[in-house]
Each structure stands twice: as C-alpha cells, then as structure tokens.
Length: 488
Image 1 (cartoon, one colour):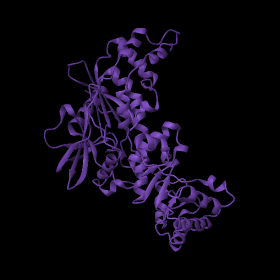
Image 2: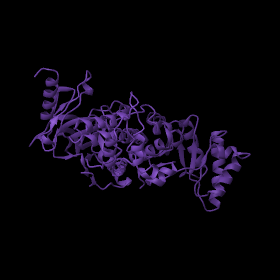
Image 3: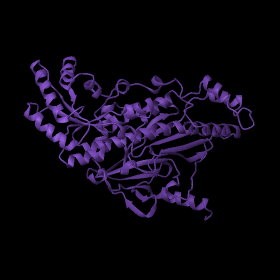
C-alpha cells in the first residue's frame, strides 16, 4: 500500500487554512496553546438522499498523522507572510516552536468502511489545543471527499445488484488526487475494479480496460480493428461496438470472436457506450447467444449512475457490467459532504473538562458537547439504533436515545448486544491500530449492510435509522444551550 508521502512531499503540514495558523499563533501567544482539547469530525446530513454514509478517510489520515511535521522549508515560507502593517505575521519564536512540534494527540475513529449516520463523530481528536487546531483542515479534506465517493459508490453497487461495477472516471476527476482518492473510495464503497492504473499500483485495486473508439477509428473498417486487437491482445477482448452502427458492431465482434476461438482464445464480451442501452443490450444478447457466445458479457457505459442503472434494469436491460465514470468520480449530484470539525471540551492539564457548545439560529448547526462515543445496538440479528454518549457520563444500564432535533422523540434501547464504533488509532502520537486490507474492509461494508433493515438501504425515500443523543448527554446539551442564552 502506498502512502501520501509517496505522492507528495514528506510534509503536508501546510495543507491547512491560514486561520488555523493565526489561531494557533494566538493560542501560543496568549498562553493557551497547551490546554487539552477534544474535537469531533462529523457531518450533518447524509449525501444523495441516502439514509447512511460509508466512512472513508482513515487510511490517508494515518499516513498524514504519522508523517506530520512542520519542516524548515515550511517555517521559512511562513516567515515571509505579512500582516496588514507589513510586519511579519508570525514571530521567529513561534515558527521555531512549530518546527519543534511533533504529533502527540490521541485519535479515535470509526474503522474504514463503517456505516455511519448524521451527527455521529467519525473521528475524535484529543490533545493540545494548538495541535488539534492545526489538524482541522487536512482531516476534513481527507474524510469529506472520500466518504462522499464511497457513499455514492455503494448506491451504485446497490442499484447494480450482483452485476459487476467498474469505476473509470479518472479523466473527469478534479485533478490527479481527485482521481486517486476517488478510485480508492469507490473501491471501498463497492466497485469491483478501476480503470485508473496508478490507483491500481498504489492501492492494490484490480484494474480493467480494453480499447476506445479511437482504436476502431484508426483503421479502415471495424472488422480490421477488431481482428487486429484480437491478434495483439487475445486475452483481453471486450470490443467497443458503437463507433458506427451498434448492432452491426456486435455482428463484427462475433465474427472476430469466432476467429479468436479457433486460435484457442475466447472473446470476453462487448461494450455499449451510447444509444438506447436497454434496447441495444437486449438485441445484443440475442445476437451473442445465437452466435455461440452465451458467456460473453455486455458492458454498459455512458454517464451512468444509480438512477439510470435502476431504470435500465426495470426496462429489462441485459447488462452484466456497469462502467460508471463522471457521476461517480465527481460526486456529480452532490459534490461536497459538508463535514465539520467542532470543539467539544477543553481543560487545563489535570483539571476537569469544561464542555463547549456552539449555538446557531439553525438547530442542525448547534454542536454537541462532551467526549463522544457511538454505541450501536443489535436485537434479533439487526441493528436497531445508535446512541451518541459522553464517555465521562456513560449510563450504567439501559440507554435511552433522544432525537437531537426533537426531544419528544425518544427510544429505549432494548438490545441483545451492543458495540462502540470509535476505536483507538493513536495514543500520544503513537499508532496503535492495524489497518485491514482492502478486501477485509469491503467485506465489512456489506456485512454491516445486511444487518440493517432493508428499508434503510432504499435509494429513494429510505427509512430513517434511529440515531440519538443518550438521555444524559441530551440534557447536558440542553442545559448548556439555556445557559448560553441566559435562561439559567
């Protein structure tokens, strides 16, 4: 497996917004930089109309944090920044302090591929206020996009059913890193392979690909193009058939396939990239079966997403492999997750925690205080609800969850078993977690899905899975809100 430092420089510490550094300087200058703080990374609303998301970003986060340091080159650059009065923005002493800084935080996170819901922390960071603040932008960058794409991928996977799904969006991605991180996240979310060769090399993802229209167009006629390709790559023959006339292209592919078979090889299939995919796939299937190729697959491409795949299946399309590019790799219909990173508690070392809350005119933007953990409950083989609770005030027995936006909606968790989702990743800057391989992560995603009620997996109007604040945490949050608003 590759790391971020294989792709970029040894230091990515300046992958941050300037205000993280200006706040960090102000913490240091005011003497509060060494206060202990707890931050949580979470999102407020699941993307694409989904009920859930697939958390993705931990692999990159581990790489980033293990290599986190502010280099001499970084501090030299920072020394050139100027304030409004044209004096240096940061003092030499502060820049020296940054250069000596080493990652010492505690990190707890949900494992890669965990099914999570709005308001649930995917990451909990605790450590010095300065360190925690400096990490905000990079962590959001690493989790927001990958979680978005993994969730889009699982929607496409659900629509495709047992058919294979190939991700091939690199050419439409937002830059090289957009292509690489999306290829990885799409694989975790459910794609079977990618066309992105560099992603295959770096992340161990299976790669797929044959030829494009330009191959066919470079020859005098389609038959010659197919025959030549078959001679060059007899073990990789899926022919793109829609360059001129789709069904005639299928017939030409069959002719080449028969010649290929006589030489001891087998045509793998054809690809449809335009036109009425339902009609053309049905007619192509007839031609392939009649031509002696019942096992040849039909691959479909052409701006596909979960809605189009579902529609084509309802129309009886005979498609075995779905190639999905632009609408997956870019998160086409919702290009951002909107994850946030909020301070939840602070203290002087050794003192009791002071819980913090951010208010807003919008209830969805009011933060939750405390040292948060997620407990997932199961009964009769299905997950029945999640409780977000405070580690400092965990209930001894039965958990009651309260809807964060309607305190009259409550549910008592009567369960056979439960498990906490956030697991230790770093302790005082030392990695204590072993990252599973991709196949283990993918298997875990689908093992989790089978344990949710099918209504939660619906692509349209999914059922709302019960997630709430544990009763005492809800009361604490309410008390802090009332106090901040002058009512207590």
